[in-house]
Image 1 (cartoon, rainbow, N blue to C red):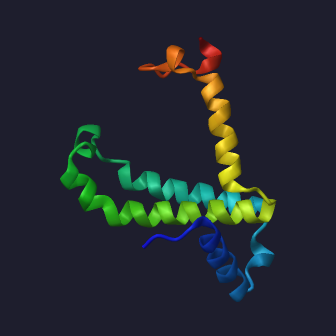
Image 2 (image 1 turned 30 degrees about the vertical axis):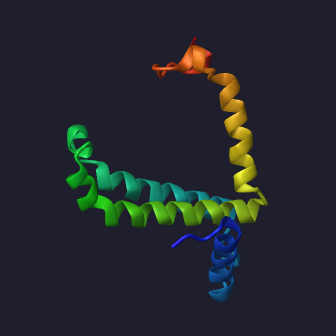
Image 3 (image 1 turned 60 degrees about the horizontal axis):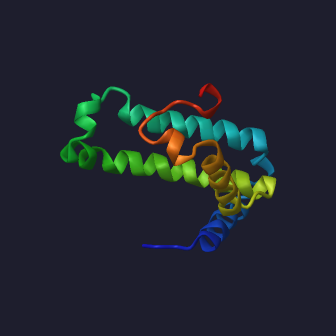
Amino acid sequence: MTTDISALQAKIAQFSRDRDWDQFHTPRSLILSLVSELGELAEVFQWQIDSELLNKDTIERLRYKYEEEIADVGIYLIRLCQILEVDLLDAIERKLVSNEQKYPVSDSKGNAIKYSDR
């Protein structure tokens, strides 16, 4: 199922309004919820050996768990953007442009050195 971002944003906002949760969705509470969900996502992979995570069977076995947690992270991130009036796609586009300047291919290909450490 594919949904465009605007339709998804509308569904998330409506879900919150229907439950009268807008009153609880402060930036702080949403950020804390986002961090919590990221922790739950990390927990899915916490005790996996990296070599196992290259195995397609392992990834498939974990798929339901990590998709659920990724969805929670996405919902809280979109909700935070709504509350702070951030256009998520525009912010990502701007960040990609910034990253292209900080990490030109000629300096960055094949290494993980932060731009400020070069």
